Image (tube, rainbow, N blue to C red):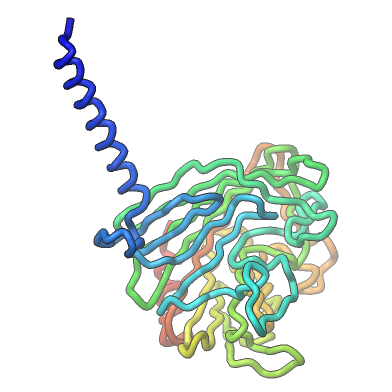
Length: 338
């Protein structure tokens, strides 16, 4: 048997080992981007999980937060672009003097659709459904890229599950004047046949800052610009097809832009655009009735029971206008990804 002295020494060794492991655990959870800690901020893309939020930091700088708990649908807010400026409208997440309060369901950056087997997952009306986070399948930081993968249920008002999805979001290190986010969603007809309905209310979306609007309230001209790969601009972009669109304008004294790319592998590529001069910026491959005045239902997208469909997009947050941001060149690089 051990003597008391040897027994005490082994307990001390055990406690020191436990404390060392705990110390390492704390360091991997969050020294990054926390200047108050006094720790040198390492380079890389870091995901930090807190209460209902996944925080994304790039080289110690806050890029965005993924909000998944107690929400009508998961979304990203805030989103910071070049120079640390806000790249979305702040309301309804924050009260900011002078911001419009239209469309309270426009939360930062999100994916949702207005009709899935007749259930509205786009708005937050009395009968609307909810997209409910179920689990994370991957949370991985890295030197040049971080990956966040989730599983979600689409629940009707009565609690019935209409469908499920799997999402993979990638955040990449880029030059200091740009940010990239890749968003992939696989929609599963997990609870019977699924119809993504013919409606303009969707789908891959962001609400741009108020100062970037093409048109300000009371039909006053804005300082923002909206252009597409097909040469359309302003309000004329709405309902047209294009490989990409770029929304740019002034934010906090500098010109910045948001490009949204529709991957060539997506069904019905190039997509139609539910892009508005008041600041909604969305790619929607389903709303043919609204966009092209086709017969109602012609834009329905049917997924047989047990099958699935995948959509891929890239958000490119850049400095300058479309040409200065080299949007066409960035699109060409993205289009080559398989």
